[in-house]
Length: 192
Image (cartoon, rainbow, N blue to C red; front, top):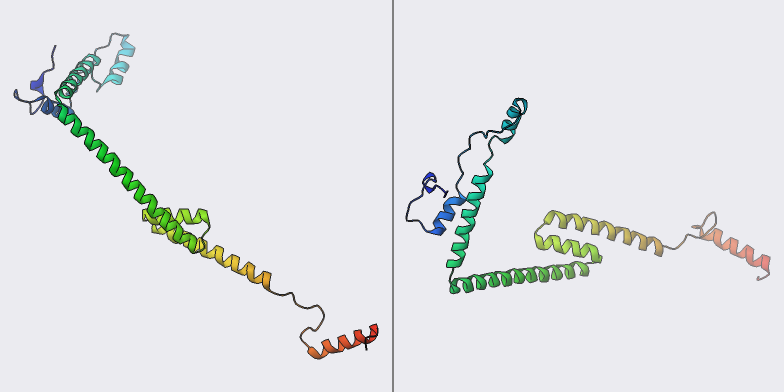
């Protein structure tokens, strides 16, 4: 039993295989009537409820095989030139994608170098460069704040490291008391 094309809206006898495929892509078969299932009366209502709205397997298989046959026919009609053109277009698209990826990687590397020159560590520079290249300004600003905090901490640590230790004693700011203490120590050791 062949597929009834007259049931498909928009069908006409002079359509090509491509037009029929396009028509089938948008075709929704009518809802089948409830399938009769031979079972006990208690189970019969439950089974009918479970299969309501489904397409019969035989009808689905028939439609699938007709669709596959139409696709095979369309593919066999494709000329050698069309096949070469399709291959050329696919190769060109692959090259275009590769070029776009290489350009993106170049931009990321240049941005990373700029961040490294500004004192960012390697991981933070990489993350910021990717975010900047992708246009994610919120992430870039968050990473800038993180870098600023790290720089301030490093600067404070450096200042604390370079700060001399205060002299010991009770009154280290009073010069007179310092000199008096030194004189006292010199006398004690016999240096005066």
